[in-house]
Image (cartoon, rainbow, N blue to C red; front, side, top):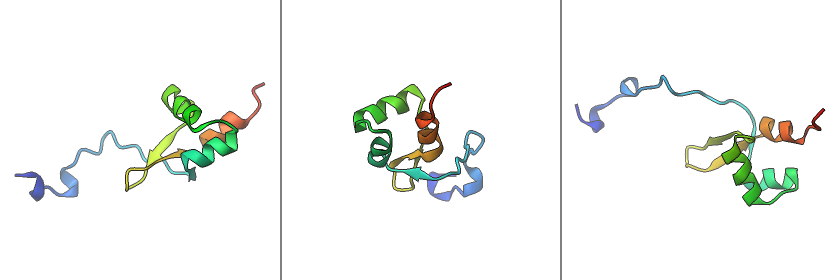
Length: 74
């Protein structure tokens, strides 16, 4: 069977983990946190911000992870 003949059922979805939640653009996340876009990329790489990919391939930041950073640390 070639790739064109595959159905959705043929794809491995065991590693797929849906992330449901509101998201914002990287620029908006930077504005909310008062940091630069570069800092947002750094926080994503560090694992401090969680992202999703849109169907078009754009990266968006989950608002829950932005709010987690915004909370004062006790």
